[in-house]
Image (cartoon, one colour):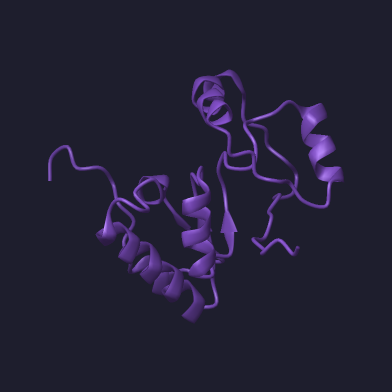
Length: 137
């Protein structure tokens, strides 16, 4: 199909020895708005569980999205929910903390949108991941 973006084939799941499946942010942003995309997310998480593969949700920005993913036992998330992109010094301070609390203020969310392009990606010698957990009171 002309103009159609490249897509990953499900046959790759049986062909390659994969460790992670990433759910694109275009699905995550539709949580709470699009039942069909929510069903796809839920199915991918279930599939990953059966295949003993970790699942990563990309673009998590709201507590509602986080809760949806937690309820379905999503392993990992990426997104601006916990922090906007930060410089190295602040990032190192984050690493010293046992966990990062969510800043859910509307001014923070707006700042995230306007400041996204001011920061650069960094390559690390080892992957940095964080597992999701329920905060204990």
